[in-house]
Image 1 (tube, rainbow, N blue to C red):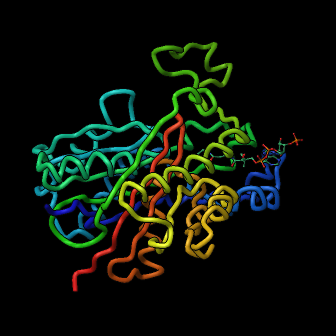
Image 2 (image 1 turned 60 degrees about the vertical axis):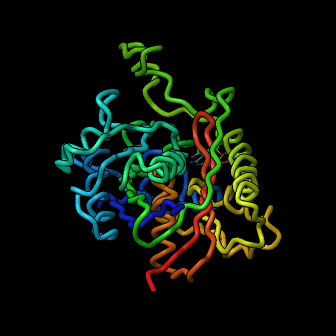
Length: 332
Ligand code: UT7
């Protein structure tokens, strides 16, 4: 049986850059604090026209070009986002319209920062059981629309961006060997936007309470992120009957350099420079988009060898978490 693979990657970043220094003008913070506690130097902020769907659409065009397939070849669009254009319809439908891919089915996946790996898991199953041929995954986030720029503990962390990929049985790229995904709903309140859904509908009161912004217990989220990403890598490798000596790279969710360093310490046999953390510096935490951006960045900068194993690992609100084991296959 053929294995599903990622045959193309594409990304989109808004032009506007917010530097750490810029926050010093309106928050009690410093560049030094942000760099030492997070590793983040700057992040991108979308303009009004750079909606989640528009960034997703533009990154999709690049992924299609990279995969060398046309819009007509896509038969399913999966969008991973927690900042969709609307509560409904899905952002997948808005992107389908922008692409004029009216022959394709379309739906959203809501797994917060873990969305990319959740979408890869769904896409692998659907192409391998031949329900769909070519699936477009779009992870796009306009986090600046839900960030409280009066809250220094969260304002400095997040940025906007989109990352797309094409999953297919045909072509070359990253074989999706195995996935592991999980969730822990007991922790839902530790990372949440309390209002704007159907439980706490929008009222003047919810706006005055600033409940339409992301709220996070940073310390708790940090601890669970390290633990869950580490465990999910081990579980994913075990499903594939492999261990840490078999992997060349870990590409983690790019939320905080200290989280990545803490995960790195748990892998004795993998040199720390094999845990990729370049993207968090330049773009901050871009939620569902982040691990796709990191994979593409790594591919461009480091050049994989044939048959190298790469593990993506993610963690996000829910809590949700997971890992994907990929094997690089070039076209020679
Ligand atoms: O995608 C998954 C979701 N998110 C994450 O993975 C983020 C997880 N959490 C984190 O990355 C870290 O917990 C943070 C970066 C959010 C915070 O780092 P920390 O080392 O856990 O700091 P802290 O929350 O313990 O705060 C230490 C101090 C506090 O002051 P006091 O109470 O000691 O006086 C904070 O008020 O730092 C203060 N602080 C700041 N100071 C300057 C918090 N944010 C800032 C800031 N600038 N931006």
